[in-house]
Image (spheres, rainbow, N blue to C red):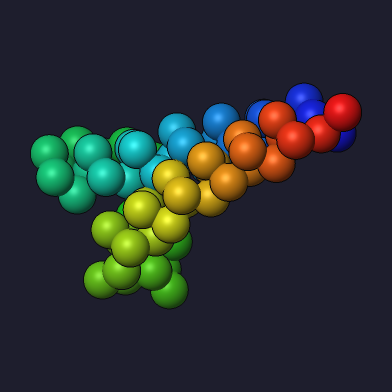
Length: 64
């Protein structure tokens, strides 16, 4: 379970950072900008993914 949480945290962190890179540097990377219902809210979604990643890492560390 710990490894699954770490994997999900890593994926969320990578997607969040790539979404922020897309917004601030106009590189076309990540999946956040490709999701239609997030149009106009890409920065908020990317920051949320980064925060979620750190929460998943914290939960994974609390596991036995």
